[in-house]
Length: 379
Image (cartoon, rainbow, N blue to C red; front, top):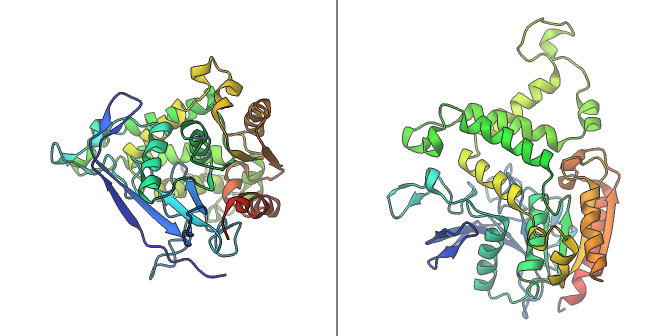
């Protein structure tokens, strides 16, 4: 298989973007990458939407940097399920993210200082509106598919409601039609870890040359627990202690168990590259997503606007976005007599399974793209 070597690109938008909050972005930039070749009639474009801590760097490696592998490299590429020899794949970094698109860390042209706490709250619908503008600028009238996992799946679902005529297929993986109260609670604990860090300064920590590292570490530790299943943690760590203790209890409060050491490592790594304000923005966008809210909670009524064909995938041990929530989406689609394929994968890895190499999962996505999505693509 040919290794992809994408080049990050940026698109500037001078026209203001109205937001769900009633505020607007007067101007902004979106970072994006493309893979493969857009065909003559532009019928082979696939948009990949990213989740919380991912970006527009979906696949491949940058020239001279073979360690920075795209977050869905096992899914997108030459000869892979989303085959870039056939499809033109687009990854867009969401507004407010810390990987290139305009974010709280960027300079507000009105003040000459970082946006910080003044950056407006954004929603899934706002992201989709921004993505649609970029897709239009690329000259693409209709996408062959919009695909995403977790929060990315919410964006894919929202595309079918906001722009039902602009896509033929929706691939919604390990996602949900809204967050449960428990999920909102986990997000709130993580946000409070950040906002109560003395180095946060109400979101304007850039001016103080600080980073709320302690809060970010705790937020990531809380979040990471929810991405793994009990089986996955038990299989990988069990109750084993770190090697330096040689199996003996230290009778103290520093990390002793391997799972503690692992979470500490994940938190430290995350705090080294992720922005605290971005974490707040993205988790709040997760909380707000609820397309059925305008229809008195009736998801079937909400999805009546959709026209796309769907692939919905869930994982049995995913307790953050359980299979039952995917089945709610499937039922609402069936209620509207929309074409939908559903795969429920008995995988042990929990929510993170959507990023991994389960053979049945990979095969289901490959089959859907080669047998369904490809039908609408000109030779």
